[in-house]
Length: 485
Ligand SMILES: Nc1nc2c(ncn2[C@@H]2O[C@H](COP(=O)(O)OP(=O)(O)OP(=O)(O)O)[C@@H](O)[C@H]2O)c(=O)[nH]1
Image (tube, rainbow, N blue to C red; front, top):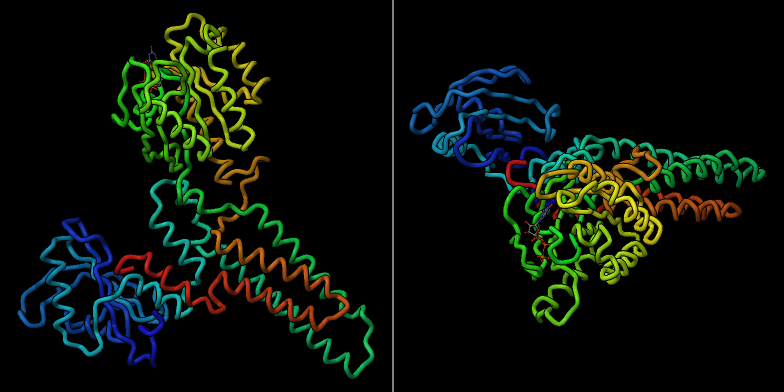
């Protein structure tokens, strides 16, 4: 992508694009960036307004001499703009013909070196002109892709520069320590210096290492929310699994029937539960017996696999089971639950069909105790519900959301959710940086090696923000943006 920008500024192409979705809308924004942006504006409106002040102007097509639109115009003078170049924005009425003609009018100004933008090219210019760093670009791409509130807030620190500022401070400190160390080494070659002279620098490195380790331990991996949390709905046949999935999805995702064994395959649906993106999988009911047909038993195996891969297992028990009449029959289910717990999966149990049970909470008490004692399921993870009558589901969803918060590190188990969102690439670079800092401290007796490790540590932080060469990543990051961003 670098080649798009090569050369001195007057040869940098001026780019333009529709920055809002195509189609009929209240407004559509066309953006122009580059050395000729103001010339395009002059040719189409006859004047250049004061920078950063909105003004209503008439856009005339240069060859047809017809009015394309009367639109709000914004002009940003470089370097005070998103890309760091001159930018012009046309806030047009959002009609298909208006947008097409506005884009055509820009092209027909026939100014040299003017072309339609490539995907992510505005952001790419912002990066190369030092207006943003890699963490903010990645955060912005994730923020634009976010479909739920928690997805959005998990990347807002990246998108708004907090992570960049932190890394910028760390890198500067590392470079400072290294410079100080090298100056002291040079000085010590002429003057017989005591090892003690290096102590303040080592203290600084130690403090910085501790600070980075704290950030790493509190880091919220952003990819968990980007990928969605996997929740498997399991239980015996006829428990109400499909009814629950349909209730949560607010539509008919699965077939509901009183016939046991209705659901044969795993049916997955993406939902927003309290701001968390959740892949909810309805599965075939677990059961054994001579009347279990081959297809159903395949479905049961698929259900087990789905549950093993899920981060949260939602076990639904129908009233007959949890009131104790057939609890013994369900040992195979409880064995599976033990297995999920052993794999550190979060397990929630819904005691369903309370509408069929007299004094339901009294009846639920022994089973709740049993689940807690025998299977180590917290009492707060066992919920009495009636999917049919919409009872108890609100509280169950609140408890599920608490598990999602912990899984996605939005909230730590000790209730401290103050860590930054870091993606895998960033966490790995931070881990490498800490490794080099630890090595630099191990080499305390050979300060030349310490200085070298400090350089490697600073490079790792530079890789996070893009200050150190990471061009191989640029195509991946910029291509995530659409044209006009
Ligand atoms: N009374 C009562 N009936 C319910 C409740 N929830 C579900 N049902 C009924 O129970 C029957 C089975 O419901 P499903 O949702 O198909 O159960 P399932 O667990 O998906 O069943 P399988 O597909 O056999 O595994 C249906 O007739 C539902 O209407 C409830 O809270 N109370």
